[in-house]
Amino acid sequence: MNQVSNLQVVPFDAQRKRMSGFTRMWRSLWRAKTPIFGLVVLLIVFTCAVGAKWLVPYDPNMINLKVRLLPPAFADGGNPAYPLGTDDLGRDVLSRLIYGAQVSLLVGVVAVGIAGFIGITLGMIAGFSGGIVDDIIMRLADIQLAFPFILLTISVLAVLTANSGSNSSNRLVPLILTLGVAQWVTYARMARGMTLSLREKEFVEAARALGDSKASIIFRNIFPNALGPLIVLASFNVASTILAEASLSFLGLGVPQTVPTWGGMLAGSRVMLLTGIWWLAVIPGLAIVLTVLAINVLGDWLRDYYDPRLRS
Amino acid sequence: MGKTILRRLAQSVLVLVGVSVLAFSTLFLSGDPTYLYVNEHASNEEIAKTRHALGFDRPVYIQYMDFFFKAIHGDFGKSLKYGQPAFKVVLERLPATLELTFIGFFISVGFAIPFGVIAAVKRTSLFDGGTMLFAMLGQSIPEFWLGLMLILIVGVQWKLLPISGRIPIFEPLFQGNFALVGKSLPDAFRHLIMPGIATGVWALSRNSRLIRSSMLEVLGMDYVTTARAKGVKETLVIMKHAFKNALIPVVTMIGLNLGFLLSGDVVIENVFAWPGVGRLVVFAIQEKDFNVVQASVITLAVIFVLLNLLVDIIYTWLDPRIRYS
Image (tube, rainbow over all chains, first blue to last red; front, top):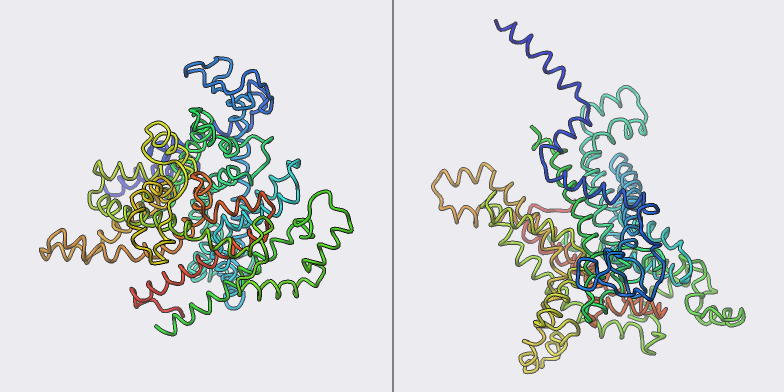
């Protein structure tokens, strides 16, 4: 009797095991529901960023003073030809909004990629080697942490923008680099902590006993096991980097005005608010909030997903 | 404990030296820093003269030593715009920034504790759901945009609160002019509310979530169950047994919080025309007043390091298990 029931269980189990990581992820995502919202929003933003060229109704930098400061189509005095209205130079808000997705996503993802790469590499080296290497890397991390991050980016961008003048559009590269380099510490600390605990595990000891090289142990044994939490950290970091980029562009330290960004669109909106022109402040802000919210919701779900205590 | 504090103090000094190196080297990011101080049409001769006058023709390590020793005496050179010592210009703006940081800090910690604790105790209740929803939103809203929306709704539409400017509280307080403080306090407070909220909401959201999860963790521990089984009153279990221990990870966050708040201030000050260091920095960048930029950055970094040191000392004192080895 017992054996028969076991036989019935086995194929079911095998089927579960065969379920790929992707399928399992997808099922968990579907069950949690709210992250679906995040995924949909992100897909829309991503589509805007990639397809901006074909999606926009107007050239985002086309100045047309005849139609300046038109309210959105759904408000009083709006013109259906400009669904989200126009700014003080008569540029189409919708077109600028669609193009703005490019910079936000690009800066968010690439800067986090840089931060993650530097941080994880240094963190794992520090954790794995210990001793003086560890000391030097972690003291560097302390110094960096003691320097409020936005001040660091401001002082770097100040020098770089002063020198490049207003004409150059290659301010994007320094912006991404600074945001990336300024944020490596969190990754380094986490990667170091995880390496320290993983390094004592039996499977690492086994690899060492088999004569694997340090690099091989770090990349084949430690890195894959530390990846989950690091991905969670990175997802939240993409959100906060998009916020930071928006702040810097708002302050006029980001990319030049000819490149449409959400933060940059908000830069001139404060003065307009006082005269009742609300859409220039409200619309780009909502785009930022929705995008960042979507990423945060997905990050929350990812964290639960990777947390073995919460996994059934 | 004295040894720990000494060690921590030495570490802070090291960190400050590092900060000075960072601030110094940013000047060289674009190659020759002389170009930051001359206008675009300057002749080669003029550039050479400025380079010599500012000492940029000396070896870099000598320039750094010079910069460092002047910096510890508060000498960052003159402000090109104001014609006064850069450090003095920064110090004048500092009380405004600190005021905003403290209000932001008060909002982010003072409200986060009750919200987080109640949300954890009444888990899955409407209050919990609402708090967490707001916390999620609060972490997704750019603080400067929240400021803009407050200006739009509370300031322009409802005309309830002033949308810019500041009435000083700290300066008369430090001068001992309490009568003036008392008289201007209500108005000063009205000016502080919106910038304070905009500064504090991000950290408030983060702290509420942190306190909630920290409380939930502690409430699930065996000793809490034991306390309940012994018949200890629920309020006592929550306040004495759980809350005290749930606070430990929160205190660690407070130091980092101050960094977020200081950074946030820089942006918020520009939204509300708040006359602090953040607004000064942005102006100085536009005016290419780099002595002021450096003086501001270093001053804020020093304050940040000192506040963190203070938090660490309090932390050591609160939790005797912590010994830095």
